[in-house]
Image (tube, rainbow, N blue to C red; front, side, top):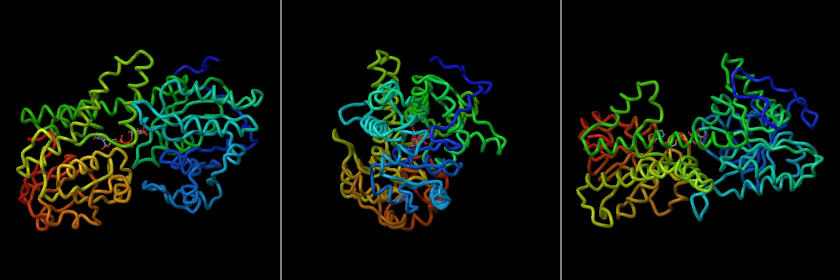
Length: 475
Ligand code: UGA
């Protein structure tokens, strides 16, 4: 069926539909309680929905049912406990129970980079959809939220067709998410848009009902949340296009940093100056160690792989460059460290043996404990590989970092990390580091040398306190 509602203004008239469970509002489930699914489950309970979160990981489910959020995300703990107590929210490892409970099932499982290439690994999507579909006994809507290669929704629809009797009329839709770690609660409760890819009026109505809490909250706060109703392919592409754009914007300013380094310019002033143009804007224009995390790096790679399969590889070739610019920032920090320490680089890179270096920051950005593809941790590993004795401190990420890169030395405080070091590298812009007192830190170190990998320190203040300071893309 063609989409009855062209994009998107004014707000289309959405058909009212009755949830198959007979409840007045659709009962919603979230399959996969990682960053995405756990946050959504908790926030949708907060919006008043009856929610069940499903995961195959019994540990995670036990923690969530006990009121413990398995990730560090500001504000989420309190919402979890409140909604568990209110009886609107529970978590289960039982897929049959999940199938029985829900009217709308959101697929929130991970789609990591495949071990054998750049494409996305869809095995978790396949497993969760299949096990759910096999246990459905009435009509329901299965909605993909995971970030996927374009074409996945059609494939999921075929999977569902294969595993459910036709007379149940189970349908599929796609609704990408745009939450940022560190701001996840607000991004779910107050999104800047909702995008749905649907094929029928029923799916559109059901999905609208499943998002009505978000629209109602916006109305009470005198805001509007734009709704884009579109087809499957566009809905899938919106997500990867958005992440590709953000990654490109970051690599653009980091490319300018490289040119500044070669020419004596200052990329922080350049970014400020171009960012005043509202067509450019100053957000996501922070030059530094570049992007990491579980999303941008793998999404731009999977996007290129998929475009290649579709015969549109050339259109996304620039994303390869975006990736390379991003990765070059990591070796640039290694180079700056060697320069500051007076070490020369050979063909295998610099030899930093005999030096002691403090790395402040391990997470891929502040206000999270997530170290997946974290530039800070990657640089710490490079410094270690070059022979330095590396001491890492991060306000939230130490436990995860230790699991990911056990060979580094992890410290409990900034003081412990910097004491007696020859060089301090600030690689994640936590407020604790931005606000650290360079005079007090200067008393602890063996040599006052600092690499500001996020251009987040007050260079004048550090220089006045006797530090030799190097930023990225700065003279
Ligand atoms: C990103 C997107 O911003 C979200 O909209 C999207 O929903 C999410 O991926 C996802 O696909 O699930 P997130 O990975 O939480 O969110 O992180 P960002 O805030 O986008 O930051 C990514 C990286 O870029 C971080 O390492 C950060 O330090 C770096 N960055 C960001 C810069 O180097 N410069 C900037 O100006 C901004």
